[in-house]
Amino acid sequence: MSRRVLSAEISHETNTFSIQPTPLALYKARRYYRGEEIAKAFSGTKSEMGAHLDAAKRYGWELRQPIAAAATPGGKTTAEAWAELSGEVIGACERGPFHGVLLALHGAMVTEDRDDAEGDLLLRLRAKLGPEIPIAISLDIHANVSDAMARLSNIIIGYRTYPHIDQYERAMEAANLLQRAMNGEIHPCSLVGRGSLLEGCDYGRTQGGPMSRIIDRADQIRQKEPGIHAISIFAGFPWADILDVGPSVAVIGEGENPRFKFIAEDLMKEVWETRKEKTVPLCNLKEAMDEAKKEGKGNGPLLLADFTDNPGSGGYGDGINLLRAMVEADLPNAAFGCVPDPEAAQKCIAVGVGKEFTATLGAKIDPQTYGPSLRIKGTVEHVSDGTFTALGPMSKGVRFSMGPTAVLRCGGVRVLVTTHNMQVYDLEVFLSQKIDPRACSVVAVKSWHHFRAAFEPISRGVMLVDSGALVSMDLKRFPYRKVRRPIWPLDLD
Ligand SMILES: [Zn+2]
Image 1 (cartoon, rainbow, N blue to C red):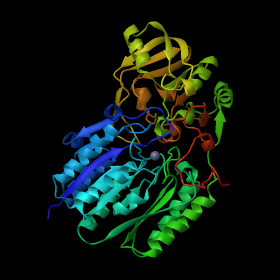
Image 2 (cartoon, rainbow, N blue to C red):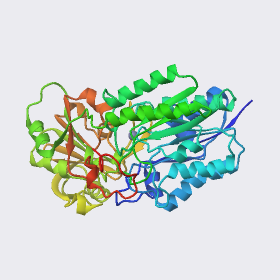
Image 3 (spheres, rainbow, N blue to C red):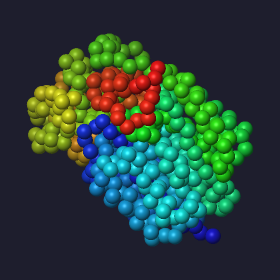
Image 4 (cartoon, rainbow, N blue to C red):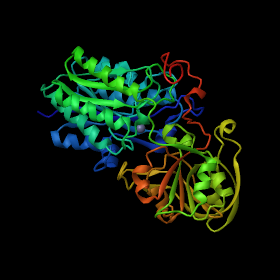
């Protein structure tokens, strides 16, 4: 029997301390496909929607895909954008009936009028579908999984890797369980356990460290215990002032069983016990420049990752403190990606390739935190529309756009001046702009961890640099009001 499945993606990681709201325009700048555009954009890609399409082929589903939308992490999604995005999914649901629902939701989305956007979407879907139709969702390892999300969905599958290189596989796992649930072979129920923690699991890093160990232990439990379909460990996303923030464990069991709750709580104990374990040292600008000025040992560039301005955590991206330090240090043969500054990008493009130009760069969204802008003289070396296809391993084959983009050379430092804000984790960000990062001695990226998948293999070393931007690891600096109290590290040690 052919089954009809509702499939959609709405993805945002919301930093509620950002002053820059996320309207529909920022979804359209990053990813916004409707109806048949979705299959065209994602067929054959290693993405969650790519997995939905492949699962439909494998199982002979009739797929209805209203929307696939994602914005770069940032401030709260506007109420208007949320009404539009969620309305697409609810509208499609009303044009059912459906045998099952498969959603790619990031799981850390806050809107101007909803602290738990995913919970809101699932509540409205449940109201239309009734209690019997299975709902399966895949989530980022940095999801803040709410009680509502667990209560309203049957299947929750989180990524198991950071950098996220298993998005396709996890969405496929959700699809496989959904198929079995639609067949009546299994009757999955989700539950979530949480602790008194704002952050944990070494921010979700999966190259050794506590996250890898806890995932391994969860696998052993799943194999040993009867009736468990999946266990996902979430590191959470701490820059969100909401009640259900923080690391969590989601257990997908056969029916309801108090044993599953015990398992979630037991794994959360290990999250608590390892909360102070960090595998990556952080450094300041001076330490980074001292190292960058040294003759490099080994091949490839030294990578400097500005984690405090990581667009993937809601940083504005237009921070210029690390760039300023690199220009002042007069580094030869360095590349910097990126400074999203539409005004400066347009000016560079208007001036033209080969011309000199004094730019006022960056720190324009929140000058109080990021300012002042950087006055910098350079030569425009390259201009383009800023589009590229990701080489991977993350998002391999997916098309991205930085918007109109220019390369400005300031001494030995070449800086990408882009229109859109995006985390740098693919070599094509540079290669598409005629900069080969493998031939540079220093490469700076706005990223916290994702860059490692593509950039670490070509590098001679990595340093995580605190440039003083929005996404500080010192959580006590932020004015939390809505999180559960007491909570580590705000109140507990
Ligand atoms: Zn993530």
